[in-house]
Image (cartoon, rainbow, N blue to C red; front, top):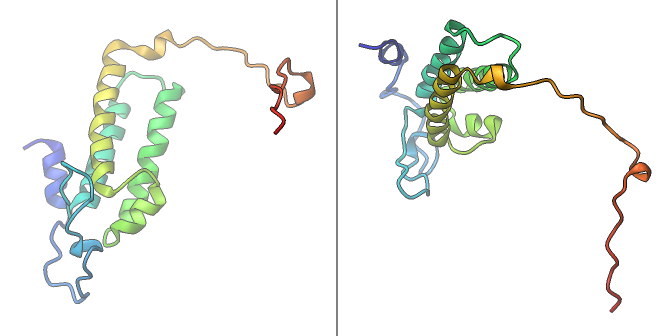
Length: 154
């Protein structure tokens, strides 16, 4: 078995004898994501932990510099989502609220897709193509060349 399969097997997946009542449409009572083609996955939260940890492991094992902005961003997002999932294993709605990027089923898909991007980024060594750029920030709008378009009078 792969490392991801082993980790997934080590996460408590089924909470069959819970004393909490099932509430239709919420948690284990959820029967639809409301998205065509995306089935409910009552194990999405533990899957998120495994998949985002796999992304962190891949980045750590790569030769991508730790100061590469892509790596910094992906690690921050992965760590945040892992923490949100670990602290709310029994509350997928809270994970969704904290992550603010869709339903937990979508967050699992996002992790899979990000892993594909990480693979491509590492394979193509894209961090080597990024050149530093000086950005001039102008906080005074009076110095801008932009002018408001004329408004039509009623």
